[in-house]
Image 1 (cartoon, helix red, strand yellow):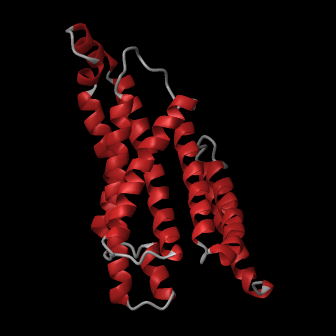
Image 2 (cartoon, helix red, strand yellow):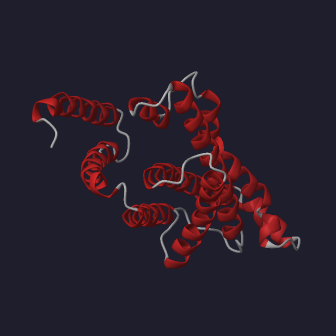
Image 3 (cartoon, helix red, strand yellow):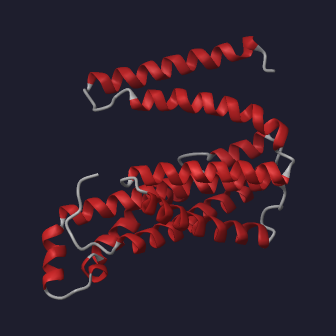
Length: 248
């Protein structure tokens, strides 16, 4: 168990940061200004719980697989809820995310770029899954918003005889591009603007800066590959738009 005294500075910092978040957003009258603070508290509780659990399962392939399955399910549900929840929508989101994640992990571990060991499968799998969730959400929402905003253009193409997929081609391409911008910027500025978590974590774990950098490059490439596959596959699945969509 961690020393309680060692946790005090962490708890104080969390309290101040949460207060700052609520204060700044509340003062500016931002809608749902408590949501980011609640997300911080929820994340802290979940990390505390998962840290205790992982200590006992990190060397077990079976339990690591179960943990990744739980992570993936939660990620797919979260993304689907952001795109107007329904079971068919969940199935589409889960399938497209799974395609991106599985292809990427197969390359990473199949080539030997990262050792195929439970702890590394959990680490890389968790990072890739989380980013695939974010990219799926961004791509789906941006496509929906673009079709809604440009419905006159889409409807015009439909009236001229274009198929729904042809009528929404421009919106689909822009949605994929927009969804990948955060990951692209993170990758381009790594080492110049930020030191990513995987890099810092590897160093804290005793790896040399060179080894940590190699691991981080693989992770960044994995995020981009999984995100690209997920975004393209998801938008292709959502492009059969025949009527004006409702706002999310």
